[in-house]
Length: 254
Image 1: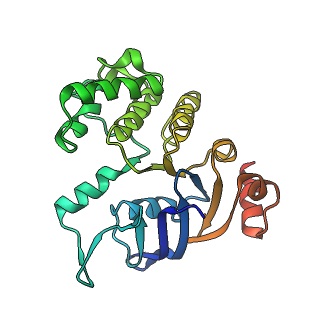
Image 2: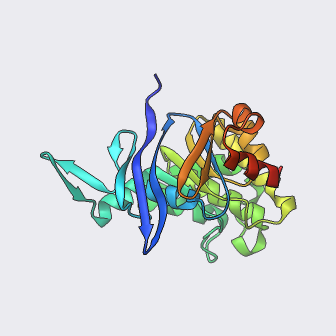
């Protein structure tokens, strides 16, 4: 049996009176791509943010590569991670958001090498070489010296993907990475994500792009109302949905 890279157990998250996650349990095997689909407000983004502890769960736990997220186990006791430990954790869990969050005063190559040099301790030469490799992989080899304001939205999102990958993460999380893009730019970002998936990195992707989920994911999880309503391989989930809730969702979007 393939070891789980991401293991989520009875995860609950409450914001005031709103229960965003309601006891969700799932695992993502090492090297697999899991796509999260479902209506807005179903808990997809909250789940991803709990995986890298941008949100602290109200109950339950997350483990990545066997190590707990958000707390440290020592001497039979648990304690919350400090700032340094959280930074080290997030260096191993790359995340790409809806918006790009690139530093506008830095060139593309400077955006990508900043983290590896300051956090991973890479030499500038090593970081630059890896940045060029990643830019080539996402189809932006000619844009290394450009600044973010001179790039399209799709190009900026591909730079964000390369920047996250430069940290050599064990896991990549994508939170609706194409939702802020014009439709004609979506394909280039999805292609870059397919290139990353082909490297065998474990990925969780919240997406409205059903074609991408069908072609790239090993498993698709349908979420609604803070729960994982149905999960299966893409062909089974899309072609023979079991729940009325999923059938209704697919009927609206397909």
